Image (cartoon, rainbow, N blue to C red; front, side, top):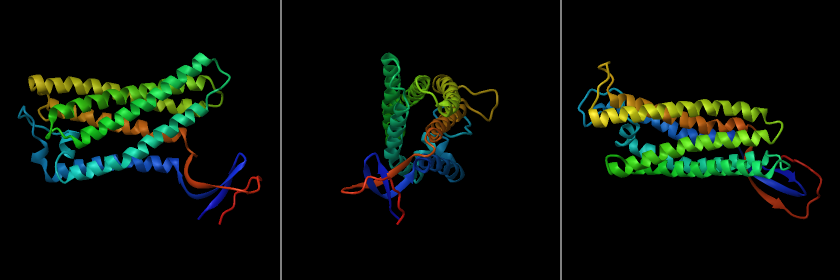
Length: 274
């Protein structure tokens, strides 16, 4: 089914329309679904392969790298990541453009510059985060631990700074424009997810140091330091996914369009279903 619409003084034939909300959900659901499948299948059928640690202590919760670094789970994980990368970058670019479009052009130039800076920084940091995610996915800790570890650190830092820049940019932008109460309400959810990510990252670092330096076991015999590290890792992953999917709340009615411009057409506004 095609349709015709008018934008300004131009008319277009729309061949395909995809709701932004649906595109975002599909994009984010790929790694989320793959991670859940990898975890349960690895835990059920390859338990011994995902519990290896240099401390030789009892482990309950395997790390993300463990459940996605064994075959055949690694193939599913890598496919899900590569297919969601481009939509994720497009969604980030659309979100930045949408927020910049909400700004009050009559506001003080210095404040507008700040908003531009933070929103552009958020987009750039998201690109770095996405690249680091590709890196840790395709360079496993079993193949090259040193590179994998550095990429993971880059991912964590860029993820947290992306969240902070996005929140900062939206707050400044909202102050320059009336009628952005919905955006401000939605940013409260992002702030909560950011706080969860910060808290979990602190826990992740503490438990990792305990695991690597002291092979420390917690008071509960069933939970080693590495299990708690892995638990924090999953919390960070789900908070990260939640933050990206929260963009839906800012863009509830936007759509991706595949269209071509019509020439020599009347200028009256029309929308015709064929």
